[in-house]
Amino acid sequence: MGFAGNALIAVLVVRVFGRDAIHVLRRAAAAGVRAGVNELGRTARDEGQE
Image 1: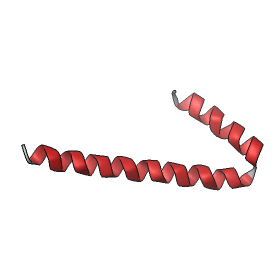
Image 2: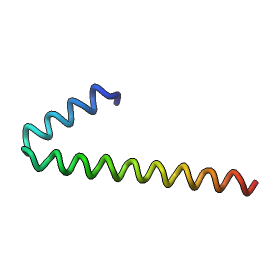
Image 3: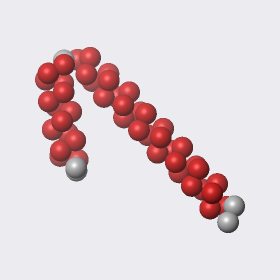
């Protein structure tokens, strides 16, 4: 799903759940970024061991 699909879902969630949804979406995005950064660090360490 591309950016447009993600944006549409975000707009629908905000319409249904109100302002609290914005906080939840921000937390989810931050968790995704942290997971991605951790994965990048792990991949870099694994490549150095070969």
